[in-house]
Amino acid sequence: MTEFQTTGVLPDGSTNGTVVGTLGLVVVNFGSTALLRRNLAATRLGPLAVRVVVVDNWSGAEERAAVTEFARAHDWDLVPLPDNRGFAAGVNAGVAAARAAGCTAMLFLNPDAEVSPEVVEELRRHVLTHPDHLVSPRITAPDGSDFFRGAQLSLVDGRIRGHAPDGRRRLPADAAEDWVSGACLAVSDALLQRTGPLDEGYFLYWEDLDLSHRCTQVGGSLVVRTDLVAGHDAGGTQGPRRGRAKSAVYYRWNCRNRLRFAAVHLPRRQLVRWVLATPAVSWEVLLRGGRRQLLQQPSLLWAAVAGSSAGLALAGAALLGRRPTAPPATSRPAQQSTTLLQEGR
Image (tube, rainbow, N blue to C red; front, side, top):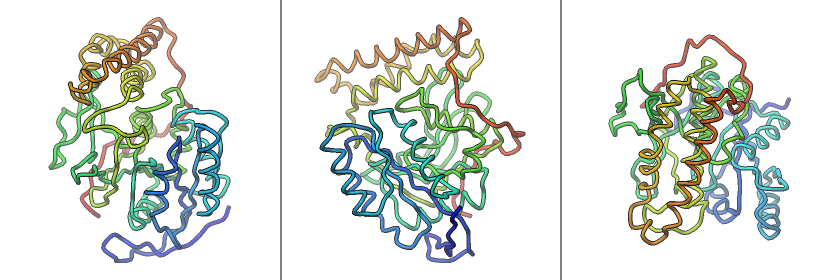
């Protein structure tokens, strides 16, 4: 395995010793070369111990040619997949390539996310120094507001609640789980080996909640570094949109995958509660894009209905004893399962 040595540079410009290990920066592309040009290519990684791996889910010959040429021009590793296998499968393919190249830490980054070299370096340093941590920076929207600074998943009904602006959790700890965002997510390969790969059964959305859950199950910790900031134009990979508008893809997979998570991980009684809450929760998911969008595109309602129906089928099968399979994990005593929120170090 090849290793590089760099002197870590913190966001304030100070140094904090040498941390050995190469970061595999994994980006899953699907028709998003323009976003790679705007975001990833603008991140001047220079001499940092970072290897960029772009996984291209097939979206057409023209896009494949464009991303191939772009990756070659920037000296990125390209993993071309023959079809569209979804986000989790793309990340797993990228992780395999990064491991083969000798990377000992990973950073999963959305094409519509932007991050500075200083933040990339500090995330690399963090997970190599604290290999039991699954780490996300604070993530901001294009208008500068917080898109993510910590969030909880209600174990009562499967609703998602973001942390308050001051970092306080909105739900009681005994009724919720914390999770960290997959838009920009760093992890040591040692921890990823214990959790197992991302669950490809989700295809799109909820993979980060699932990975967060499995991280704590094997003794890892969830960390939000609110002193580090990444930008995210949420939904940018799904084309032009107005205001709060979401896509049919967003509604379908969010409604389905909420119930897949329950079918994989929750005991029977909790699963039943999530099933009963599905009409109300799916409606709330649909309203994330605003009521006006439904007037303009009534078909979006059917995307949510289709996703909810698919999720209910998974939940029903689980109640009959046929649960979806999850990636294998290596157990370890859960001695560090408390989510951490860091304003700095």
